[in-house]
Structure formats: structure tokens, C-alpha cells
Amino acid sequence: MRIGVIGIGEMGGTLARRWSEKGHDVRVANSRGPEAVQQFADEIGATATDIYGAVESADVVLLSMPFPAVAKLPNDLFDRAATGVVIIDTANYYPDVRDPRIAEIDAGMPESVWTSKQLGRPIFKAFNSIMFHALSELGKPEGSPDRIAIPIAGDDAWGKQVVVGLVSEMGFDPVDGGSLEESWRQQPSTPAYCCDYGVEKTQEGIRAAARGKAEKIRDNEWRESYGKLFANKPAYADVHADVIALNRSLNPL
Image 1 (tube, rainbow, N blue to C red):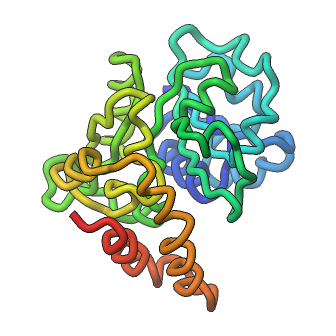
Image 2: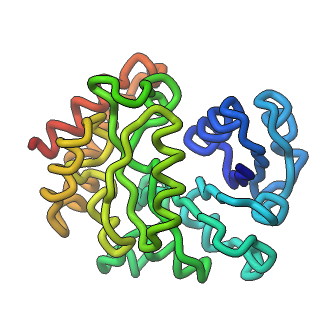
């Protein structure tokens, strides 16, 4: 499969690496041009390109970038995209931490609906509710006990099945998160968000999400607790279990 990855930070870079290992034709890009991603591309066996090259003829395009960068993407970015290209959004909105305030999202628009409107394209929300360490290290073969589940939200049934296949290939159980309008149920500080649950508890978490509650947790208890956890700048792998325990404690099922 031809996969374009725009943004090679912790999440985008991890997915690009894993997909390249699986034999996909991976092209990586960021806003600074091919030279900025060449070393990483060489390291993982991918092709360095610009954002247009990541989109052109791709079967799947992964957007793994902060909200201000999404807003700056050129209007013609997807003009030469393949018919039926599947666009996956991994972003999470953390206002006043790493993102500026976005009025539409603060008023209740689901984050990925906002991104879809910026692009003028239908998209899927996936891989946003798992930490990059789990994505890199904790995948298991299909049928394994305690396999972590990843919710997928989007409107097109065929495209969603493409994402289902990619999630399973990475070693995780896909869970249907509903339509893109329902993707708020897997946003930060909801019960299904970054808790490393299996299928049943992830489904329970999606059902248990309550509008308005997650935003209050994200902006108050989560911010304070997360700040304390990372005050001494530990290596993430050393505190992954603590992060998961924190997320579960903020939204107990």
C-alpha cells in the first residue's frame, strides 16, 4: 500500500517506521521540505518528499501534526490525490499547552470534524488514543489475550475497513468509534483515551463519554497531574504505566 505520512514526530514517525517494516511504500514529509526528513527516511527505508509528494497517488495519507500546522496546509494539497484516498488524523487538541485556542472546537465541534473542514475532505480519526510507546512496543498478534484496542471514527464504510486493516496489522484490535461527528468520544481525557484497554473496555469507554466532562478534566486535573509526572523529564518508557494509570483514574469505568 502507498502511504504518505505528513509529520514525523512521535506518533507519525512511529507509524511510518512500523508501516515501512511491514513492507508498505511509505513517503514521509513535513512542512520544511524533503531535506528535513531525508535522514529519517533513510533510517526507516522510506522516501523523503514534500507534502504534495506525500499525497499524490497515495492510498492512505496520515496527518500527524499540530492544529496550527493543519490550518496552514495549502488549499490545493489534495487536488492530485487518488480517488478514494483514505485520510487518517491522529491529532489531539491541548489548548494552552501546545495548541492555541480554536473557537469552533471550544464551542463543541469535534476536533477531527474541524480538521476535515480545513481540508475540505472526509477523514478518519484513529491512532490518537494510544501513546507512541504502546504503538511501538505493545502490539500483539491477532487473537492474543490483552491486545490493546484502538477506536476508529469516520463515515465511509469502505475507508473505515482500510483503517481497520492498518490497526490490526500494527498489532491492535480495531473498535468502531462511530461517525466522525461522534469522534469526540475518543478525544483527550475521555474514558477510552490512552488507557490501553482491550475491546470490551474500550467500547465501554466510548459509550461512557459525556460531552463537556473531558474538557474540564483535560484543562484541570489532567494538566496538574501530568505536569507533576513529567516535572523531572523522565524517559517516557519509564513512566508509560504511570500515564496509563493516571488516565484510567481520571475516568474510572
